[in-house]
Length: 92
Image 1: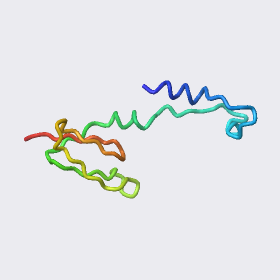
Image 2: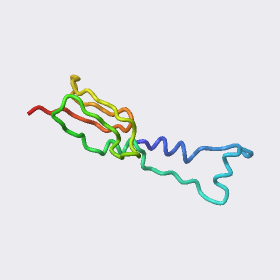
Image 3: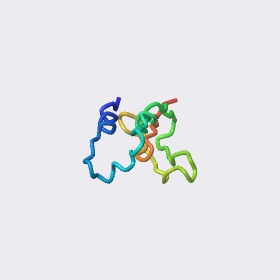
């Protein structure tokens, strides 16, 4: 999906005396192809019957500040602004 980003990163060209070239002396440039946006998109939408849900990242101290997401929108799907998790309101 983001192959253009990978091509840009891998094919970045530095000037001869650019200090950023020091990182690649004696080795090949490596790029991690697991982008966070793709990993979050693979996460299923959490269904709830509540109108308002809270999200803290689910990691305790490794999470993020707790936010409350209103699901009373037309789409009935809310997305956490910190971690990108999605929540959907279902009706009984």
